[in-house]
Image 1 (cartoon, helix red, strand yellow):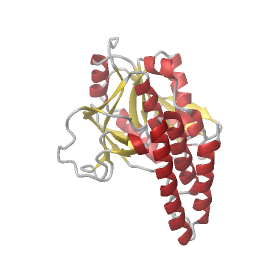
Image 2 (cartoon, rainbow, N blue to C red; image 1 turned 30 degrees about the vertical axis):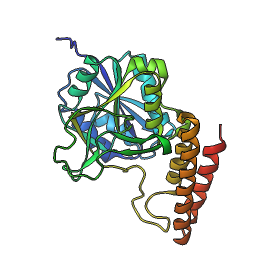
Image 3 (cartoon, helix red, strand yellow; image 1 turned 180 degrees about the horizontal axis):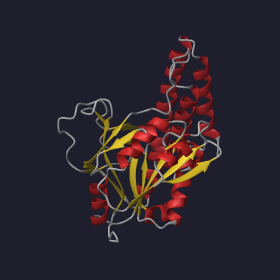
Length: 305
């Protein structure tokens, strides 16, 4: 039996009642060219037995079952801890609502192997249903308002993002991280649960001296927001109020933890004005659960420890 000399990679996928999405992701990973990887599937408190069903169909994966939904942060941290115990060289967080190209992992590992001052790298991420449309070509960031966005989102891919570049943050949809960086900094911040945890993790890496890289030779396809939207539209819309709570609260967590005094003041003014206008819009449309969620998120984000 030939032993691979390629660095080892643990690919961590979170499943929560989404068998079909996770099945498609795992099926695409079976076809990748990279020779030395292992998939760790964390079933995050599913109540539809999808974790066990996926293990039955993909016996090669390692299944970790959580009795409760620990969110994006808690679920991934379960996988990260398991991977660290097995001493993988790299850890890739990968959303279960993605499918990957067979060669996607090779450029990411190759870049980090040849650039030791970088802590993490990401692929170019396209929409799954419109594969010529970009979902993420790196992270955008305006420091003074602590604003973040996905570069290129919604743009048709005509080669405008074919060059590698440094990026201020990397989406948790697909981020390959050195295990040595995780040993130094720890995993995702558990209290975030979901939203902005990837930005916070990226900022921690950069504060510790590690650079981050967008590697467009690597490509994957993303359904986008599959876990945050309801299948049926209600009076409150298709996005549950809890999502607005986490987005509001966690952005303020981010501001509190990673801004300087001036950007803290400016970003707080901006976020408060933005939330106030959003509350007015939601109130006029009778979406009072979302109004309450944003108000609670604003309070908790400012005052929770």
